[in-house]
Amino acid sequence: MIKYVAISTAAKAFSLNDTTRAAYRKLGNVVLEKMRVSGGITQPYVDRAVRLVNYCDRLELLAPGDKVLELGTGWVHWEATVLRLFFDVEVALYDVWDNRLLGAYTSWLAQLHDRIDDEFAHLSEARRGQAKKIARQAMHVRTFEELYRTLNFTYVVDPSGTLKGVPQNHYALAVSADVLEHVQGEQLPSYLADMRRCLVPGGASVHQIDLVDHFHYFDTKASPKNYYRYSDKAWRRWFESDVQYFNRIQRPTWIRLFENAGFELDVADNVSAHLAPLKLAPIYRDLRTEDLDCMQLLIVHHNPSS
Ligand SMILES: C[S@@+](CC[C@H](N)C(=O)[O-])C[C@H]1O[C@@H](n2cnc3c(N)ncnc32)[C@H](O)[C@@H]1O
Image 1 (cartoon, rainbow, N blue to C red):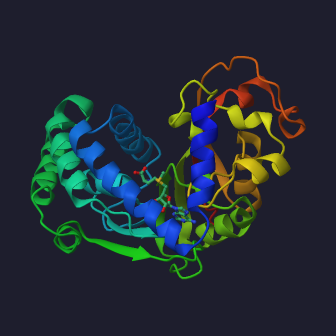
Image 2 (cartoon, rainbow, N blue to C red):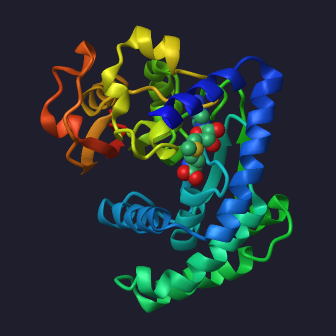
């Protein structure tokens, strides 16, 4: 727990003002780029690529020419790129700050290219061949502008973190991974309502939401749901920060938030791990065991046609 407290305290200190926040992000990206290039593509990214393509195929979410919106596209435009390899779509990449890492992008794309035949063995040879051809066109680019021309992407940074400026009734799919837990809890009702308005009638929304305590990633001795121990007041006072913000929202609330925003649920898959006993703060005491143990939520919805 010493590391946990040290990291959360440092995150609070870095959240002090615009200069410290910018310093944290710059430093974080330098370290991250080194780790991503030297460590190579990680298995969770490969698994989620396969899962995304499978959801899109099984639920028939995309048709040629469709427009896709990737929220919180981050360092390596992962969901957008995977979709573009397997579907003939245009993608708008949305984020709240520019944290792109070209070296990590090209290196991971080249590695994904080499794994397509094994990881996507269930798809036809023609489809895998087409995906590899597109990957080869994109993996040697020298700038992001060249990449966007090659893959038909557009990149938008909107520091407001709202979706007010995104075109309405426009996208066949809104997709994100490890993003929605970083949207301010109070902002989520309007954020999800705006996300639905961006979709065409029948359009789909596919999200991977990470419910793990993000400080656990720095201190794996702390429980992956260590934040269950704290009330909202204590959490805000001691741990919550701008630079490592996550909203601590649990599965039943996510389901309700999407429903209130007008979405209809198609799939809600969990990745779970049984937790060692923890003293729960009152706000978490009513959760059922399966919700307490939910580490990752994979949800697919659609925007009803009427
Ligand atoms: C943990 S990173 C995940 C990045 C990327 N999806 C990935 O998995 O490689 C979270 C991302 O969400 C973005 N983000 C934070 N608040 C957001 C918001 N309100 N709308 C869209 N993206 C947001 C961050 O800037 C960051 O790029």
